[in-house]
Amino acid sequence: MTFETKLARGEFAVLVEMNIPKGVDISEIVTNVRHLKSRIDAVVIPDMDGGVMRMSALGGGAVIRQQGFEPVIHIYGRDRNRLAIQGDVLAAQVLGIRNLLVVQADSMANSDHPSAKVVDDLNELDLLEMVRSLQKGVDLAGFDLKGKPAFFTGCQVQPIRDDGHLAEEFEKAKGKVEAGAQFIMVPPVFDMDVYKQILNKFISLNVPVIATVFMLKNVGMARYISINDPGSRLSESLIGRIRKAKDRETECIHIAGEMIRSLKNEVQGIKISAVGWEDRLPAILDCAGL
Image (tube, one colour):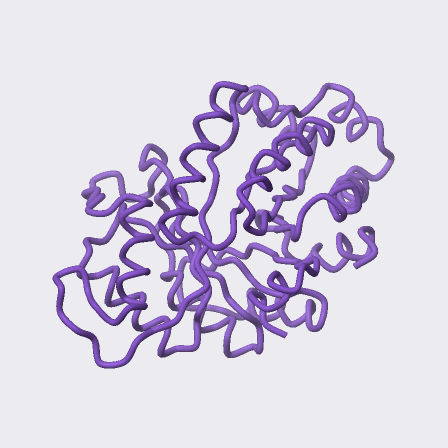
């Protein structure tokens, strides 16, 4: 059953996020994804997030596809103009990659290539309209395509800072759905009561909503997030729980598992982001009962 079909049937989908290597040694990502056989529905592949040069999401998606998994690749306008993006999207279709996630690219502030020029030829709405046009068999210059691609395309919500920002992101998401987004991915929030209220807001747009579960690694990471992303609602009590644990890594795995269990009946799917600890994903799924 495909990722799209599972959501169409109203069933719960499990996605994991995996960064592809900065180089050509794909052994680690191949090993990690093979350990998830029959346990997940798709693998989300970011495209040079943070402005860090890596193998392209298109290449990473092809690798995941070769391993028998469905990839969901990021597309955005920061690094490519409309000509290159259309070419990559068509190539994705031919490579068997049907799932696209239109995102707002990360800032280049922490890029490992600070002199790289930002393109930003197309914004998120433009990209969704581009995908819609390609599926009709016409490119952005109005020329007919030889063969029509078919995609399952989603959009992403930015981290929610406060109620006012939630209203802004909701209106943006509404516009993205009208432009062709078929599912919505929402960033992580660690206060489950608050998160459920946020998720319910986006569920009202009547497309599948996928929540993000971010795996904390240690007290330092938790503290950094609580200070620099107050919208994450990462509490002192949660930080204290990790600090007091005899085995802090196991505690972080349990926290992620608990979050998944709490969200399972609230949304149509979850995306687990382990940020370099992809080898712990099976343990998180075990804790979540998945």
